[in-house]
Length: 251
Image (tube, rainbow, N blue to C red; front, side, top):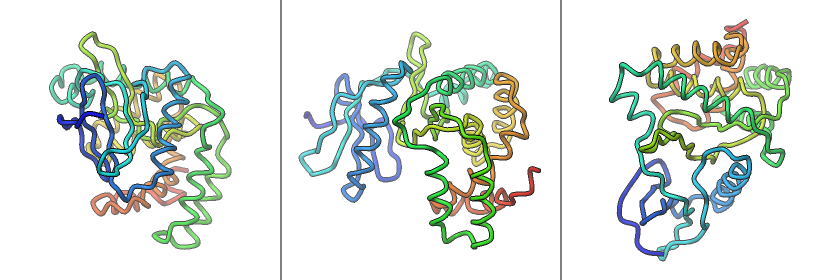
């Protein structure tokens, strides 16, 4: 593999480079091999659903010993960039964003991990929550309706590339699971709210209108969504997430 030169994105424990017609996601040396392989497997399974995602070409190791995944390179800007550059089109972009998320939720892939199992394990293992809160959150999670829809798990505008022809492409399926669409919507709402509450409210209103979903139904997922994210240990998110842990707040 040629040495990748152009940096496309840098995130915790990974960087993405352009290498000709491909994008190469390179993971830190201490990043678990199992997580790299699971991300590649998720992506391969999502490809089979027909959703607009970059195709995987290889899972390999760099000369320095870092695991990496090689995808198609998609030319364009992120939807996050376009929203910032064209605020007059924000509502239009948000409707496109929600329509794309609903397309994701229209698919099924029974080999994906189950979201409820993943979140239950995270909450059970959390030592940032006391035993009573863990019990209440796990009880709520167990009582929520079981669905088998494809969920992205990190669906936000920075993970959407809009190509020069206006086509949308969904990136980063490392958190993909199957489960209830409202749980995925609650995650997206939380991701917006951590940056911009007005955008979060616009998203919630748009999603509930377009999907014909009661806002209260999405809100019931917020405490368990917040609890699952709290385990990431991001200091600037801690206060907001802890405020959303009250399991009776949205009754």
